[in-house]
Image 1 (cartoon, rainbow, N blue to C red):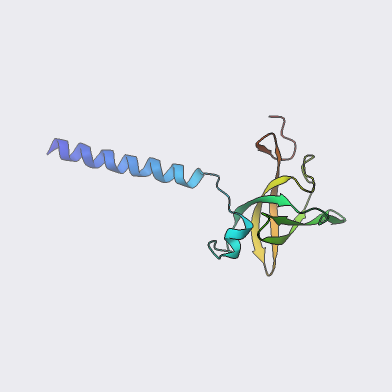
Image 2 (image 1 turned 45 degrees about the vertical axis):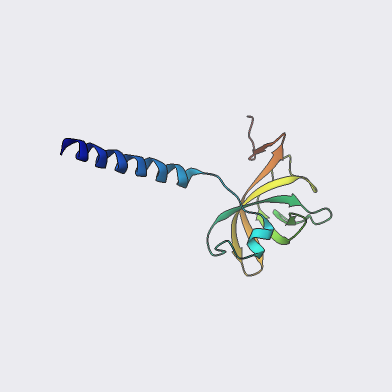
Length: 123
């Protein structure tokens, strides 16, 4: 009986650990995956891709650009200061949600040497 009780406690603890790890994984999807409707567009999620050449323009503190994976693309709107490494043709990971046909980014990470860094990061 004691062994069965310890086994149940172990299984519950293992489930809780794996669930916590699953919630903290920083995965992102591509524009193609979004186009295939494999993502719930009504919630906040991360998208990774390249900033399309010639697509960046600003209006006051709001930046508009297009993100692509060379198969699919969509327009992005971001209000705020972009990371210093943000450039056309470079990789980014954006976090946000869709509002009608535009992705509203709440966070933009720019790629540098295989690492994505937020604004002001010295790491």
